[in-house]
Length: 211
Image (cartoon, rainbow, N blue to C red; front, side, top):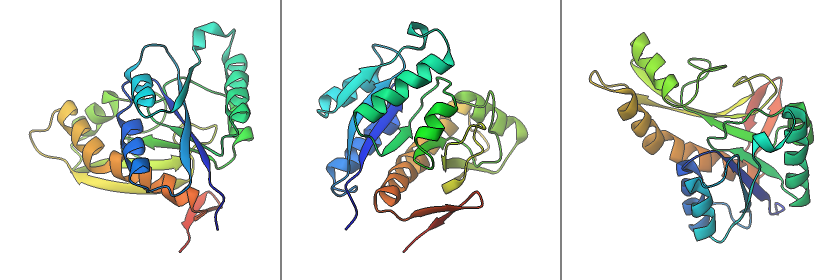
């Protein structure tokens, strides 16, 4: 029997991916495991409202309250460790953190990126910028990737990917919405479920999914 995992979700905005995780949790997708903490990088974001509505504890860690990235990262690790967190999910978390966090949670931090890595990823590729770049390139498919987080931006081992068709009249906003609804809200909960079931193994920077 797998040990029930405590999950923290880190957010910076509206929290649509957080909501998909909360909904899946309510449906029993994660078994005994549960989101026990939501940390926002700024006050007043709607993701905090979602956490409150679901009865999940939340905290705000503002980057500007800390002298530098190291001090911020140390505070984040402390908050996660104090809450006995097993899995950290970055769901639109736009604040830079350093190796202290990765070292505290090796192969236990996952991120969702709105493109098929290694396309349209790395520094500067976030939010609508990703979809603008995809449309400028004229790609016929795009999608999203769930991956483990490592110090190098968007370069960690890939857990799950799913593609959607890019339509000829797509705007960045339309493509973003389709990828969220058809991909992100499905594969992020699925990756969390696999982690909670101890089915993910990382070897040579590749993720192997167990039966």
